Length: 304
Image (spheres, rainbow, N blue to C red):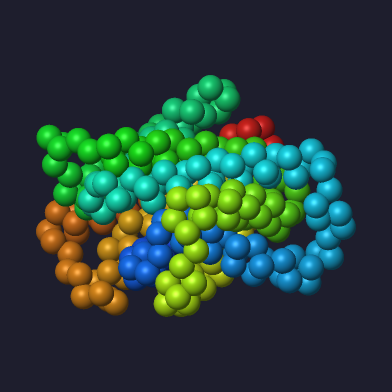
């Protein structure tokens, strides 16, 4: 892979972060009408429906529901993704949005730490960039560390699951079509949450209609398009780089909140944005300076 391919992967992941950052605006409006399980069900069902025709148009897949090794791995990713999303949504019921944003962002710490158990090599610029991004998220979230809520534990648990999801996606992304990987995950997530909705929340059809625009955005753009870009980008981007670049989601969320909802950034939040941007750039510094044109990128799991 060349520097051009490396840059392309980073830009795809950055676009993913923007899409997910804007999604916070729609999640906020959608959750005014339906519960967290229903919202999670809607986003993944719509996401699965949205990805299916694109998958057929691009690849004309065979044996979509075959019980093979790849589908089993994708189903496992779907379980991790579902658990992470539900923990995050439930946690936000008990804690503040700022705390939830910081604790979710801790996955940028979990990724390289968990990666060590897989014998992944993480260079010092990534560790430095990760530290700066973490401090940036701290400033943006305005954390009061003296307060501990049960929601904090739930959101922190979701952060750990998101880190596992990033790592396992990086492991199997080169083994199959990103469309298959995404479709199976979304179907598993929709199936699980579809079973849970009548048990814990009940079907609120009027609420679903009222949240229609929000569900369409998070289902089509945030889920289908966003996760597709993530999987494609991770084919050449190391998992630890992926975690840092996706932390730009917090910056874009703050910007979209200001632009659409009129939420102004405080001085600490602006400092946080700057630290996150610096962290993302520093994480790429050594590879950009040392890699010759055309030199392959060593994937952390051993694939080029």
